[in-house]
Length: 230
Image (cartoon, rainbow, N blue to C red; front, side, top):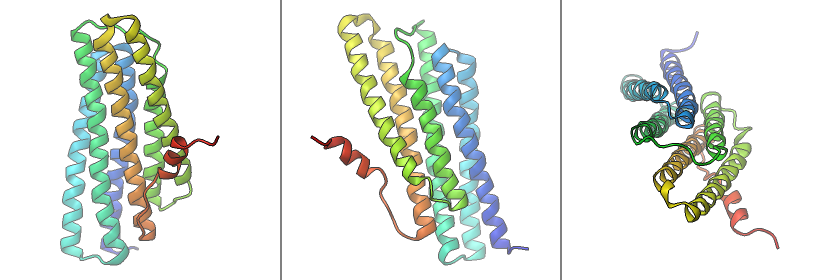
């Protein structure tokens, strides 16, 4: 049987796992809501975001209480500090999904319709969830084996976002009446990109929790994209 400290840490991990589940569902449901301009789905996303926020507060309370009462050292203290930061990133991911839900309500109120096939945005939604799943696996299990794959995913996500922005600019050149909806496309894409960025921060925290060393992820792939081979 483990110590009380181990039990408290495991309980916090379970709450983080629940936050991960909520965030993943919210990211995909927000995309469904935006694709169909469905306010009822947007309201479900908002409810998930509220539950996620409550869990983040609970994790913060649990971490502080565990540190105060059990006085962990070394790896356990690093893990608890990491859990606290991860909870903050998960809270922000939930907020990004909720902002997309708010855009759905705005689009519905303005009676806006899609002017293009939604290809990149659903892709970004799935990419952000996949990135989150890989990062959280590293946090909760200590398995860093998929971190390199996560960096590749981020590079692809950045390129897809850039391509979508260029496509939208071309649409705007042809039709100025779609400005408001085009802006919503850009905002939704940006929120998914930011969600993936927070997942990368979670992965960086996982590396520190497991190894004790800090590592900045994604730089190698960004450099390669900025300086392609001739």
